[in-house]
Image (cartoon, rainbow, N blue to C red; front, side):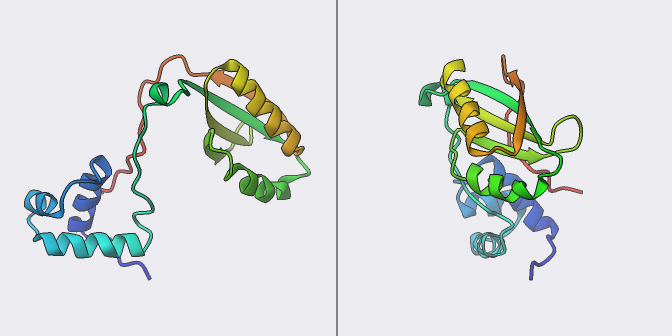
Length: 156
């Protein structure tokens, strides 16, 4: 059972979302807790799944995948149960970074990274061939990211 977050937990989360390598001593000094209290709280939040991962953000250009595409996908109307199959399939696709089930003119929005338009075309061909329930993909090419981030506000 997850304990409700108190203000110390929220402050810790704000700090570690910006720098997950910050030492517990430094976090504690910033919020008025001992290092051991910070460590206990971090351990609890990891165990409870409040902190689900601590990752390195890699520069896309340096990694060789400088282009980002936003793909809106339409699912056949009678085939919404296929969403579970797609979810399982997409978990194994590293170029597809995020997928959202949405309302509006499309059913799914995917954030896809690729080396170039040719590789993106290969990825979308694979999406369509491996997932016949996807009937159409609408693509937007990101010209320039304005803001990138996964920060989740924790303050009320």
